[in-house]
Length: 90
Image 1 (tube, rainbow, N blue to C red):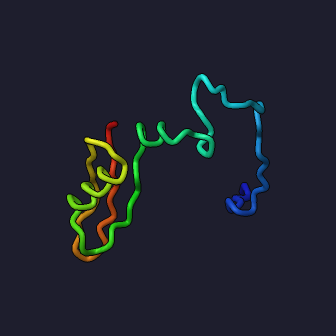
Image 2 (cartoon, helix red, strand yellow; image 1 turned 135 degrees about the horizontal axis):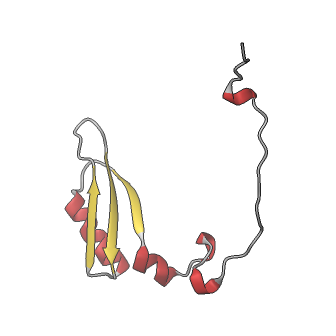
Image 3 (tube, rainbow, N blue to C red; image 1 turned 45 degrees about the horizontal axis):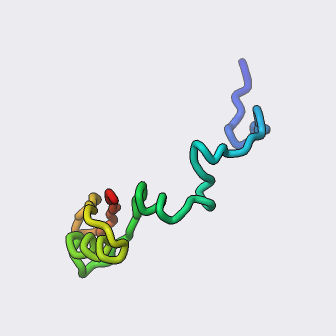
């Protein structure tokens, strides 16, 4: 009978097919992305504490970032915190 190895006992190697740099014509490394692009294409993952409504937090996001359109989605389970995400169009 064939021996079955556990996943953690198998020695694995990282295979790099090629080393390359990001072409600035096609994007940025996340840590080098300019602030206007973050605002234009961004999503905020927010762990909203109990208290302010999602509508109120959306209004804060719009005011702080100086944008007209923002929305939110997430869970509203009463037994947990309101874990939501916000996105916008600038």
